[in-house]
Amino acid sequence: MIAAVSHLARLGRAGWVFAREGVLALIDTARLPIVARTAVRLARLVERPASAVAANRLAAALTRLGPTYVKLGQFLATRPDVVGPVLARDLETLQDKMAPFAQEAAVRTIEAALGRPLDDLFASFGPPVAAASIAQVHRATVTGASPQHSVAVKVLRPGIERRFKSDLDSFTFAARHAEMISAEARRLRLVEVVDTLRRTVALEMDLRFEAAALSEMAQNTSNDPDFRVPAVDWDRTARDVLTLEWIDAIPLSDRARLEAKGLDLKRLACAVIQTFLRHALRDGFFHADMHPGNLFVDDAGNLVAVDFGIMGRLGPKERRFLAEILYGFITRNYYRTAEVHFEAGYVPPRHSIASFAQAIRAIGEPIHNRTAQDISMAKLFMLLFEITGLFDMRTRPELLLLQKTMVVVEGVARSLDPQLDMWTVAEPVVREWMERHLGPAGRLEHAAEGAMEVGRFLSDVPELLVRGATLVERLDAMTENGLVLDPATVADIGRAEARRGRLSALALWVIAALLACICYMLLR
Image (cartoon, rainbow, N blue to C red; front, side):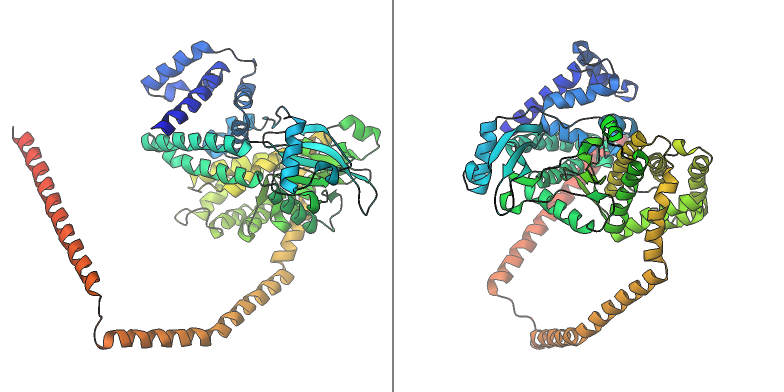
């Protein structure tokens, strides 16, 4: 009871902020029941939005409500199936920027996490240079075997786990009650949405996972042109602290400095797209928050990515799906594009491949008739997901995250080169993957892997046969003189059967009484 009151109080405050910021004006009241419609109209009487732009109101309300709500907004931006494509696009503008916390609190967190005084860890430790919902970043210097060098120290916000837990518990409370009363809420699986957010945040709040993501990305991209990631200082990294190489580079958002440096912006735009596709297709592991604030260009002209708190993963099936979809649109092979959806099991087999190919052609052909600057790969995927919904394709969260990231990456590339031809840039990476995995060499490799699996199975056959024979012997021994049960077990079974018999009799009497009442009402 106390927990319910606490949840209602927190949710009530959120409702007040949404009403005050004018968020309720975004709701289509015509589709609401009359009671809900009246409640929304009354709540709108307190509207005092800080922004006249409707698209900014939700972002303003979420920012005002604090870190958990900012994360919720960012998460829902990847789920247009839940909030709708228009609202998802609005949420993409939500910036994860918060006021910094005290320097003294950061020092206490670092010393507790690493078990050493700050002076033993860093030669200097500066004020925060950036602050977000979960952590903030300081610039520091270290000395040791190598010359003194600068590092970025990311420190978790004090008490942030407790704050997130309380808010997420309230979200779960609201989602459960929504699913109890709304079929639409059950269809959208709101409880599952909150649980996914909870798992995502839990990973982000252990900075060792981000360090591991950086390490994995560094290993994957060690031979890649035009891209690198900061090195992790593992000796100064723990659950609440992450220490990285400091990046002296130009933010990709600073076009004027990039031009003054004499960098080729068209080459950088091409590198942004090809880097993202290479990571998604080749590695199945991609940076899922590649906005301009997380991308830099170093003196050598290489892209450098930071902030690896949100990552995306694609399995072999999803990677093949992505490659064949892109290649099918590039070559205008719409029937093959349709087949891929069926082979992946994304579209139920009761539908017609030919009809699905026709629907795909309807979105593919207009794109090929447009100029290079009008072709949007991200928009293509958005339209594709809308059409697949008509053919009962279930939501694929990993593909939605991919599509959301593609929107951001494409926007970054377009800001550098508005005339960028997406298909021409994507084609070499996609073709390389196709030749590597679906060409003769790839088929031979898959055949070899299959042969190894068969070999492993055959090597296990003797042990399986021995286990089977032993099991048969035990069953024979058990049944030779009949199964023997412990007297206490027999007594328990008897009591359970008697109880079941009483419950069955009671149920029959209740059903008989209900039927009698119904008959009486009908015969009156």
